[in-house]
Image (cartoon, rainbow, N blue to C red; front, top):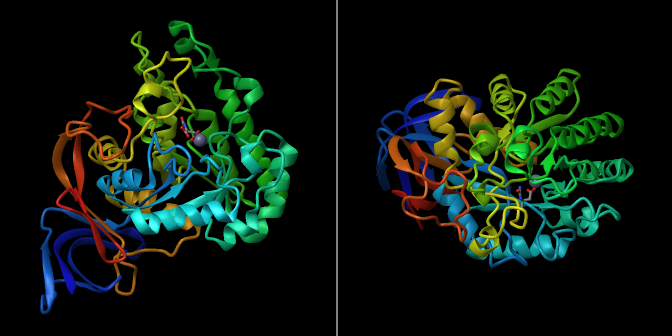
Length: 429
Ligand code: NCD
Ligand code: ZN
């Protein structure tokens, strides 16, 4: 049966929409958008007071399956994604086996089709085993549906190797996503190098370790013509490098996480909370401000979570022994609404660009809009709902959310993926 989404405030900047409208969905697509649409032969879903936007896509998510099901599974982490308002995620390849050939891509897709609560777009590794030595089976992965290439979890260490990845892989017209980090320079670093590492007596991880590879990869994008996307950008000079690359007209984009915008190294105190141990590390307040400035002026293209579930026992070890990463997909929409939109730093339209339109564009996915003919991938949220992150637990298998206990306003209530409802009144279906 068709259904009518009634009376929500629709925001879709790509189609110039910003106002109260009805949206009729039949099958997997939107069939009509307008005022006071007839409800004949439709199930009516009343959405007044809520916002309806093109479905959110988080283009940096660790689903952990195959291989690390003790941290999270495709079922549990896409469940968390749906709870957070996501209609799709791009899954990272640091699985076991590594997603470096078509068989693993096919595996992820087939489990997602069977058990997933949102669309899963797998990213394939650049190099076999994420080792930075031998090219991955890029063509095979693309044939099986890989949407981008990255060695995320690590940077490709050799400049020559990265150049070969880009030179070879660009024939598939996919984006190279770079986890920029010079391992020789960052070594065993645990937190940002400077005040934080000194205060806590931990090995530091200099901003330059990230910036050197951002600069290198921009140079390689210039050399090869391949599309480059800088992942989880965290430093002021990194943002400046991307800004300059864009001004030059290079095919360079970048993403930022809520934790690199709304948390700083100052959050890590003498309790050594391992949820705040992330890669790249939380940086200074000036860095966070610069990342937000990039979000405002268009330098930053996408907001992503880098959702990285870990088991409780892994995170309850000493700070130096705990793995890097925090979860966040259940909170990111609320964090962006609370910290950027409600404060007037960005408007709803820009939020939709950052969390829906641009991720799809960078990954080369079919565009989604609130217009007749579009896939009915839609996110509905209540902008007035105040809640506390983690108060009801998490849908994710893991609870290493660095924003646990934060008061936020705004929450996804309903999500549709290809016309199928995956979240209803805040409950994952
Ligand atoms: C990620 C993980 O746990 O897989 N951890 C993290 O801190 N970001 C790896 C990564 O994305 O770098
Ligand atoms: Zn990463």
